[in-house]
Image (cartoon, rainbow, N blue to C red; front, side, top):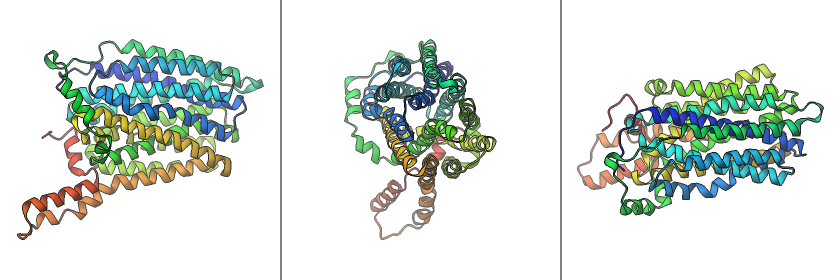
Length: 444
């Protein structure tokens, strides 16, 4: 699809809108946990409610991505805002745990709609050489929301004198109002194709004809999805379970909100300096090192640390978690076929939501069996696994570096090329992708 070359104003407005939308969700998630606790939930029930947040999006992501591949991106943004605001507000009026779970699912569906539209917009309106940078700036909006939302929730929620049900409901109502503010930045955010060109039906049909399994088999897509799943699961369980840890360790909701926001502030700092880090280390090494550090730090949350030490640990963890999301977006976008980029991004979000269903449910089960520290150990193992996947291209590059340099006269050129392609396909995203996507390198 040929697009015009828009200025950067659309990206700034998108970051502002995403900050409000993500701020509302980040404010509502801990408030939902506190309201569920006030309604009699235990750690296992909190995990189930956190998982329901991702259940509806799990089934809706790919159809929304298919629609966006052959249509406009912008209409999904206000739809997402309406659903987020409705889910927040109605969660505040819910009087039972099943109602809390249902409205949490509506909130998750709204967040998915907004994110698919916004990510597709960034992919469509960014030149290939700018995608790492633009996705990094786009995710700054998410981090700003994650920075402000938990602080606001912590200040509003109070459990003194049995007021937890009332104050958590108030936080959810405020979150609905914050979500509504994001529509003020959505005007003229999507640019028309160059020359007013409209996509032809044949092009729309070709986007629909790209099979889902074909996209998943494309080199780099599956590994990007898994890394994104691991990083988002860590962020999600931290948001949902740190209030439970705080209750058990006598840490007040205000301090818990401050700790969550400290983690988000470190993520913002990471994404602001991500381009120099890519230039220094390379995309593959940066992703592997960040996942390794995040895995070790996430497991350390299980230790009985005082609040100040937990704050230092969460700041370091937030910095490590800042890399995975934007780089997995650009990896998936550049690996996928041009006519199915939104579907590939939707598959990435499906993986995210699958993690958000399975990880909290598993965390709730582990918390019920082994205490609230166990989910953080599980996250550490998951992130260490993603580090192993991220570093795999380096091992494959070492394994395949010698054969192409020593051609065998007995091997037909066509067969040699097919063998190299097969090895490359098994190895996942390699350093040649890094060179192609580095903002400082020319794009072939």
